[in-house]
Image 1 (cartoon, rainbow, N blue to C red):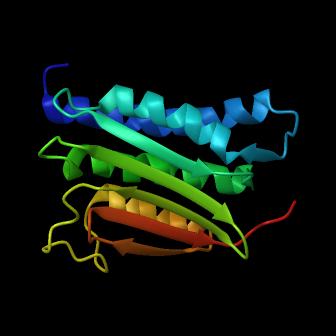
Image 2: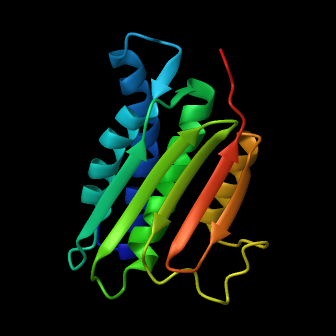
Length: 171
């Protein structure tokens, strides 16, 4: 494939499919067929994703902080796709200078689930209106958060952070 925009589109769709397939793999490999260990899932997802689309000139480190968070299949798939889109946004837009690039993912489960995907990049440009999103990736994130019956807060100081809160669903 010689058209760069088409190549990017193919890579984007491949990564979305991979994120869904990994949910299936983690579910199949576990002893519990009703919930997904999100740490195991993200530990598998992130290295493959970063390797597949990482710009050659930027080394990106990642930090994961998740302990004992298990989600139903109905919640794990949207979370995987949210992760996919947020990480893609970071890799493609945040790290133009290429120095000390870090993507941080944390997930907690207290009164609600809280997923945070953050980078230490340049942050969203001032021209981006986060209440009226026009890019497909950010529209998809907002739609998936609604599917989770959750809320999203996007912070843009010291990089970009997506803070997603959604209810705990007990099975």
